[in-house]
Figure (cartoon, rainbow, N blue to C red):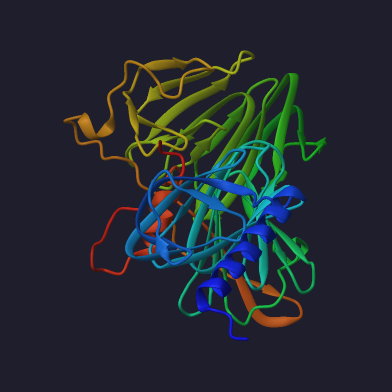
Length: 409
């Protein structure tokens, strides 16, 4: 007996509906990955991706040329998909997993937000507590790019399980044929400066004495009545007052001083200016003229800055704005303030002081012991933001829409 086509169609629909009804009853409701805040030239499940839509576990989002997508993730955090990006989202063991198939993806998350970005070769996720902002990109030549704009990022090779920690403010460039990561013990020590005077001070927990060397990555601390004076190889000088702790690094051809607590005085006597960083600000001279700057972190987490000589630029993190502190002036920034008050933006000033810019040249590659291939670690401009990273990676020289910052509303 021939069954009419309409009955078969109805029977199939009943089976299809019954299957999903059973699945929902058994608790297999698709997990919600997040909501679409903004979308342009993007599709999901073959249909146009609209703003205010929902992304479910298993959905693959494709962004076309000049397109972009901003997602608000569940339970928190944000993600940005740049143009010509393809990402498949899923939920595993409470984690949001973003399988990056092509293009570039940026993530801005708090400590409580479990988000992992996967490629065919690597897993990328935040390391440690606090807020993390990072970017992962697959270039057309199959090179992998990872940027840690805020916080530390762990890059794990899926085949070997070997993991590498990418420090804040750095970018990893991994060639398509590279295997594994360089061991930190293979990185040659770089002498940043010499100790001019020291009393009640330590270097990496060991007593610090005059005449000693300060290496890239060293942390110098002083006690209740301690003090340390360090002359950098660039002829600049750093003084750490009592109850102070700071780390010295040189990610590119420039000295960075990460102030963790206490008070420091920086005398910039050369054109190679010291960049002072805290968890909230980047502080540096606004020109190549000699400067003397005093920076302190108070017990109530407020920050005070004194421009003893020369103009100073204060750059809130992660804002791209820069504020001018004129010579002979000071400012106290409360713990709950995101920017200094009463200061002009550098772009608004009429004087000759230019907005600070620190374009980093490529850092030397670090060789692996078991391969001639390299992973290249490069410092990225402080406060540049993920949007700038997405623009640099997705730029094609033909214009197009501006990338959306994951920290933007």
